Length: 199
Image (cartoon, rainbow, N blue to C red; front, side, top):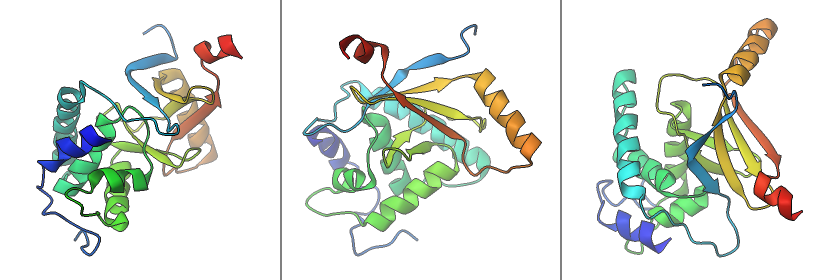
């Protein structure tokens, strides 16, 4: 966590908001290889040595998406999104509070939750309900198709997958049922290929 704190220490573009302030292909199940995350393990560090360039690209794409929608990626929202993109694992809201607090000041949890609500609403972040944690989306397009995550109960890896076949099937079922979803996130838990070999 130290390297993320250090990286963010120089980005005081949110005005140093503290807890007393408020924010006014052929394979139908192709993996997204650039989005492998590990869930929290006891004492496991957050590490992603090449995160800055990848994160900056994702932020630029996110800002373009927000601009096209006529909404703002405020400094606080941007910082939350940066930390999620830089992390190699999903993060809980209070993990984000800790990481975003700089120079001994703690950001208000409500501020982080409001930023997360905005990012989720616009498809930039997803909440993994089974882990009560948040993960940056690998896609920053207008496409609001179904997103699926494979969550390994053995090693904790989380892989975002893209499957037009699954997305189209879910859409068809929703249309047949006349159902209007708020989110379309599938979480599939089990054991990855590596963990199956050792169990």
